Image (cartoon, rainbow, N blue to C red; front, side):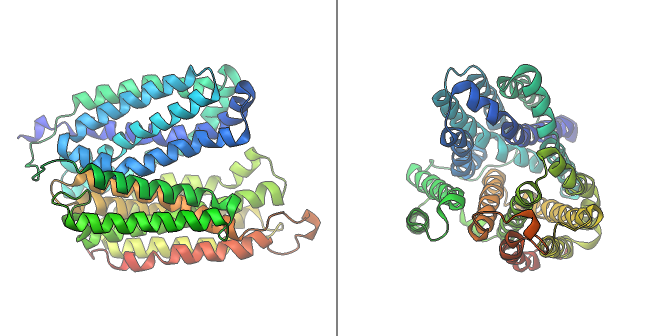
Length: 456
């Protein structure tokens, strides 16, 4: 296969666009939910399920989708995922009631799970190892741009065309991704032996992840000591143990031994989980502090957090250069220590903190997170065993879904139920001093897997 037939630029555009549509969809939904609730006469719980249903479907099926991509081709899975994502978006935009929205969001999650691992696997197939760092950095920057632009775009769409426009805009984007995917040409690679897909193992994995994510998502309301939390964690542990036992006996496991025995890949997964947990746990507390503790409106809160977003976008190419010069281990350790230091710094914020001081700490958080993201993602993609790029991509996206849910659960479980009066906030807010050290401890756990990454 010649390099001219591979068309790496088409693969990069399809990968970036696929990652952006998912990131953008998640952030614009937050803006659309209040009007969606009023228009459809939905309850708060029903509106929450428009997010929860999607999250559960994605988290449960990412690894399975990656495995299917390894078997049937990532180009095919990305095309099907994009078209299905667009069709589900159309269903939401035309929904007559909240039940239809919830069901369509779950379907959207299924197709989102199909396309996400494929966006990474395609990069592994068409780019040589020495160029992966740069394209992963570009993809990371694009995701940051999409996440940052989501609230702004969502506000414009909802204000001028209503909440349905937030979903209808996905249709042309999905069609464009499918067209780009059809233009991709990947080299022929030998596929690993694949007898059949083990439905029992896939069902156990999906059930274990769905129960875990659902339980963690409910901790802000239930608490860590709630009966529902305990039962959910126990059930997810039992399902996980059953899965491990079944996989050991399976001739065709969902997560092959070649993947689980790869130290760089598994260390990167653990690193992504703890780092994303640290970031989102910290943001959960900080936004609560800024809006409820200080009384800032969402726009002012967003402006306070702008340095975080800017460093996540601008820091990606710097992280890629550092990765090339210093290697994965030093880059990841430096980034992870930056995340831990930033979260501990945020725990000391008080109402008298200056914009400059707050901005510097948030900038450090964004820079550290981006360094870890670029390093771990590049390691995952570059060190994936031959023939298993899809399942590794699915594991990576699963870590990026479970990590934030875990971080928010840790933070929410230690926050006070009510915010103190502003006049009582002479020092650090209790929510910051209690929850953020625990979040920092979660992020610090990532230093161990970071130390296991290759030196070069």
